[in-house]
Length: 373
Image (cartoon, rainbow, N blue to C red):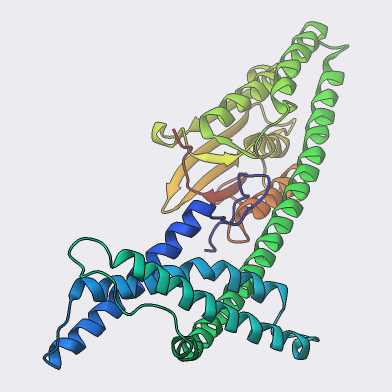
């Protein structure tokens, strides 16, 4: 059985966005991790060569370089997005990236040298050391700056491409959800007039024969329509609520059939909060009543059985008519089957067949899920 694909609860689907604080926190967390890894590698290398050196000084050197590089990452990301390295104008943009990479290297070397000179004067670290920027240091830093710049450019392109694909996917999902929502609303608008016309036909049959019953039927119909046409309804409700709506409908039908109508409902209490499509039971029962309403029969009997079948909720509606009823061709059943398919997928729906003895049975299957809270 296929998995369900319910409509999203939000009107729009939005990709996750990180706040500036989260982005900076992640960036400096990454810089700290890189700085510590470089420190461990460098310090262990010194230990193996029997020249351990001052671990605090080495730690400051590596962390300061990593933190300054982290501060320059936004500049590199901006340059990547401002001048796309791939595209129609890549020959123009490539020298610009080279210039930015050189500038990043110069700024990184200068800022790192000044930061180390300031930190090394802290108590216990030995005072001023040879951290002043020189031409030789600038030249030696350029290859590293180019590598760092290339890595940031590559990561930016990968992340942007992933985000672009993800945004397109979310837009497609949102469009499908909006289409499904529109289709469900159209089906609902079809179902409600269909039910109303059928009930008004029943009223018209009683107006001259039983005017009091017709008047009471109109009152019951008004109560039912208040529920059916209530604004801002979701497409699902609880089984308990659906059974209450069914009772309103059956009150109307009892006025029509009088003592001939007998409806038995067998629904375990533990399923009362199960989720079902709104206005599902009424078309099923209406169909059963239509198939059972044979003038030659003294009793119009319908049995509703609701059971859990694994991860599926099965709703069986059986009539005691003569059989051979065109039960699956009515607008109400076709509409309900289409709504189930829209809400849950092709693995769920409505089936019908003649019963073994007499009458027919219609079975609606939906995924078994419960309302939260």
